[in-house]
Image 1 (cartoon, helix red, strand yellow):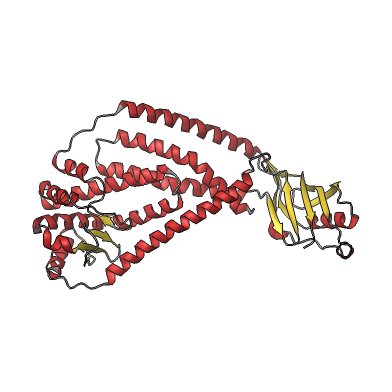
Image 2: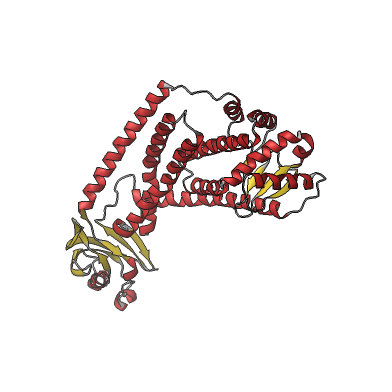
Length: 419
């Protein structure tokens, strides 16, 4: 297993408790901000989701640049196993499990990435098509007036489709509003104008870019429920903000509330890569528009959340203490790029000799092998000597104690098998 696979697998596993800690902290902050403006809750949730990406990314970078250790590697003709770098023993082999974890993660992430690409392709196809709806020119002009009223200098395109039940907004540099054909003919013009004002608020705030970042983080960290919960809270608060901006523009929140109530009658499977007017909980949004009222604190849920947060902090403290202990002394790390396949003795090939050689070798402060000895012979002197010669060609990152390199003894095992 490569050093990257090991470091990446450990990072994925560590994010299980890291994401739980971020989720609990986010829940506490959002609870404290429950009666504040939606913009504050939106900012807090966005910072939390960004932390879900940055924390494991920073940890992965630290593992790869400083502390990653490779447990084993395969080279054509023989297998090389490095012992003394902390491989797990017994019924559960951590390193073998990490390989499976990384493989499963890669498969699931690839499926979600393809789904995301399919959504982007759908948006691009809709944006390119030209429609011939009889009311399209009228609403294109209305959309241009709305863009000017919101102070949007970029041209906002309008597309009409029969496959949606709610307007959606996509694009940043060349934004497009996709309008269901049924709404152009079936909804009252003043209500439809209110929905378009909501979509224009998304364009004004560049929400599409944040939505793309959300999809990326959801794709990479799909396995953690806290990521999906935080991302959902972002979408809920984003819709509340867009509702407020649209209501300010209209001067009457009731009209937007009526438009949302009409959408509540329609079922729409949300296109995650676009911003829909029926995103979030429509009844909650209508209540915020018509009757905004303070939210009381649920003490039972708060106590349970506080207990989970305490457990997470305890886990974090233990993990931090363990990391500090491991940083005091670090084992030497092999650089497999410097190792080549040992020369197979011609006599051993002719005699079909095989065996297993276990060596102990000393890595000096300069990362070179200074000394080696046979701890378990293969039974053949030429194979033993070839193994010693092979490990002597490898370069290591020397062991460190308090950040200073020092010489240390390690073990290696060569398994000579003829193919």
